[in-house]
Image (tube, rainbow, N blue to C red):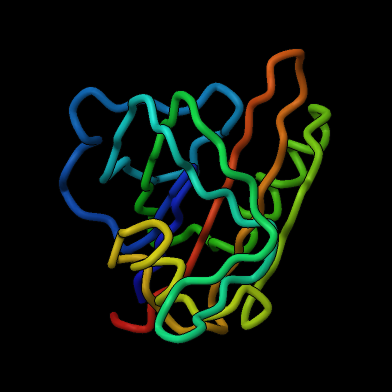
Length: 163
């Protein structure tokens, strides 16, 4: 079984012998999943970051998100591969709960089919094909972090059907 989580974009799967991607680091607000590795990392200024606040849909072969924030600024995109003993749902729930305890405001959350089609999240929104999996095996949340400067965090987790 493979599990992927995307923080800002994050991901899960059975362990491999590879180490974290060179130059990568964790976000200070996020406790790293136990036994995980950073397998994808990108950082930079973005002018159009789509931040969904509802399930994603496809209409006329186009990604449609009616309720979203269009954000520009510094983006850190981290994809984790979780270890074999980590349950992505437990991890995602603990992450969301921990962020709430720091004063983060949950703007949107969904799970399973309530998120829409996983292929839209993976391919059209995040552009990370490894995030594709069964629609019933996904979790997403978006939060506004506490503090004077507006900062946002989204996390998407999925358990893939392949082993």
